[in-house]
Image 1 (cartoon, rainbow, N blue to C red):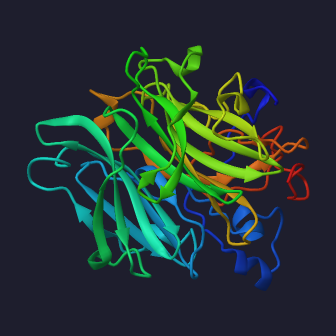
Image 2 (cartoon, rainbow, N blue to C red; image 1 turned 180 degrees about the horizontal axis):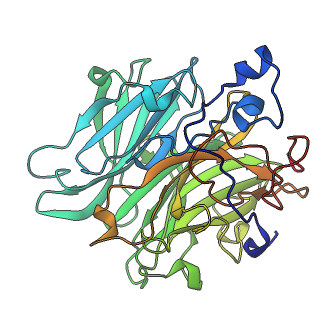
Length: 376
């Protein structure tokens, strides 16, 4: 894979305040000059997409709608909003579907929800602490039988998702591959001197593990141990005969960044040797675009149903007063995922404010003369 040092350089944004066009607009009006991601693929190009929502998760379009959830700065509730386009999510009404109890279990910090449609039901995986120890973080699961996940009346608590050890557990994601459903999550394992590593297991149902966990990565490289020794925030993208798993590393300030694991699609995903870690981080702070600490990503599909979209959070300033965890300005952002000719993902750099963002060469970061990217 190309080194991060040779990835996109320079600001990709243009003047703030310009409108965001949808994919449909490209079919009804002839674009003047280079076209935007929004016009070609239906990928919104205004930044940020949603303010003060960290750990963002956008579902694939389901029954004509995208649904969004993420951590709120107060860490006290779970929220969901829906819209027919990704660009429509900022203006969509946000519903509180669950609020932490006043005391006791799950009454501490509420973190990093993910929303998944599994076998005709909705599930939210989230992390919660307790009132007497807000950092006694464990993973819990909510279920809804309603078709609309913004309907708060449909949600019921299935309970804690139990893992091999009763320890600090968060950032669960789930995916289906070759007839099996898997869970990947971050956890503090006893007798390993790091904050969190990543684990994978097969599931017997959406709230129960069927196998013992396999540790597939632990923070050892210099970029994974800045401030804290962390691998967390896994997200899965399956394409080109491989399973790509992104994750986030280090402290939640400007040192936060994303790494990549890769497995062959035919491999045993529960075998640690199936996973290869890219030596360098693949998505990092960029001072020229004023994006600091990009990470805790997810993936969705653009309105064309084909284009992969990176969903992530980042701040627009480096200096933070106090604990970065309590700085509220990690904003949700989205941008197109490019692909190398060898079939591996090229994330580039986090784009700057404004919009629409013009088509660029993913290798140089500069607009192309025709508006067509050099790598699809």
